[in-house]
Image (cartoon, rainbow, N blue to C red):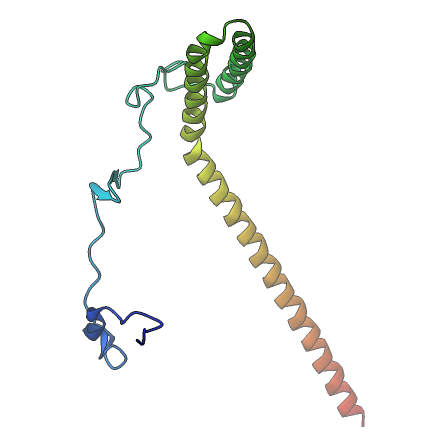
Length: 168
């Protein structure tokens, strides 16, 4: 019994048979998805919105106002996390049956830390893009300077060659 190494192409490849002669004969791509959609059994949305902790069923451990001091709150949550981990170690030694509450508290602190960090992602993305663009500008300026330097060097060599040829 013979088997093919690769499966046959999908039937819609025939829609592109005249593409090399006339690229306009190919079908238009489908429009982008907007709103919610289901993929592999999960509901997703095209709107890039960070869900609040309350929507996720997690108590918010930092102030809810829009002027959050991220550095202060991250440090505070980090200290609180360290304290709860030490308490968990104490509970595991002294009262092992009560560890579940401490695990829940630690989980809540981690979720708050992650939420604070995720709320900083847009700022991080902007800063990264600014940095990349500044590097590109710097590289292009260096390339222009290199081209100018090489042009001047070529002009100098041509002038020297003309002087040498005229002197003979």
